Image (cartoon, rainbow over all chains, first blue to last red):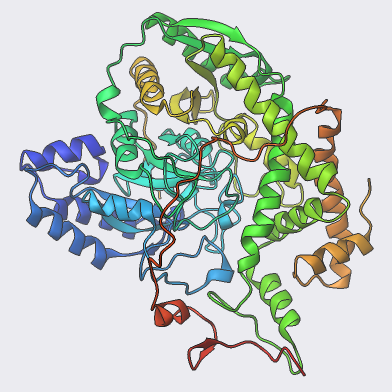
Length: 492
Length: 95
């Protein structure tokens, strides 16, 4: 077999089972692509020795009894703590941090036989929509239509770039406001953010704990279903993880959605919506109708308040979560001057270790939680969050099974084009994705087609809480209908 | 409302992030842009609405109140920038 790195998870699994190839061969194919990643800068900590050891162990275990991911090489976002391997959330403040423990998600993946290729680039502490706020420098989108290098989206930009460029078979991502779905959409790949509580957050470096959720980033919907089954499940170490049985998500992919009702939220049709995005959205609705679904207009009246609500809540939680980076227990401590005390140590360490966007969000969070402003900002945002969730509950109560919306307001943009000094402009990238983090709902991004400039765009399906199986089946149906097979040509 | 450089200084202090004096005006300006964006929330009628405390309401799991882990001093200190004699070391706190 040639181009083993281009296999999907399902294809690799089947080839391994039939004895047509070995995990070592697939892993070596990925490692040699990773060595040649160049400007893509997707893998930031490479672990070839670990990968080959794990691949050999997978081959030795054999493929008869069928651990779901046995021998499948994956990339792991730098946000996941991996024992003995650099895990620094793309931040300078965690330079050199090698956890003494393994996150629950990676523990589960490895127990399913998966092979770790290395750690993937991201926005610092998952705060960003372009992967430009990384201590490792930006990751680059393998899609390219002119002389510009394009962003792969963020924060899981390295994961998206690596999957789209076939540097790995699949990858992990995390999603606080769109960080799985937006990069998946901008790279022509698939990503699902599960229901809040479906996947354990233990060992994943925290950004905004009431919003963070990990999920798979893959080449197909089937692969996301396979990987999600392996990642999900109750964990005593995460008190918000749900004690619910994990369905076999792959078994749910029947392609039959007859009788399902798909809602089209009118508030997502923003003034001046990108024409390509609007067209693909309409086509997607038509395809689902062709497949036997009923398509109805719905209203989610508080949609326009989702982004400001998100920035209050996420910043507040970040200011609290990131208080732990104090130069005492882990990571890097700034050089201190003579006579510097503990306060100077904190202040200098945090000023030197955090990048500008992280500092900004910590300080905004500090402000909205401070005495005198807590009610006006934080409590008000939590109330609006209740209303945003209620909007979805009302739509589902009226019989909607899933909601179809764009994933992003535009295709990928060039590195440096959305200025560092206009953070609000960058925040607008998450306009279609943050709503469901606030409501705790699952959402999946599926490649919809190419924009007129040749770059991929994604459509997002939003489902009921805990019904990822049904949601993935609708996504699978849409994927069959769009027949998106375009891949970026190798130029890097 | 508008954030002045004094407020920016106070917030940076609360957040324990060193910001040089000459960077404060730009920081205040960024705060104002972000808070201006956030102030849209004032339009929303939230009378009688409960602030969200849990997005997927569920009873927390209970377990026996017993020790489940421990004796990990070496692992706990492994990543410390400065650890001595089984402790984290920091600059002098008390004169």
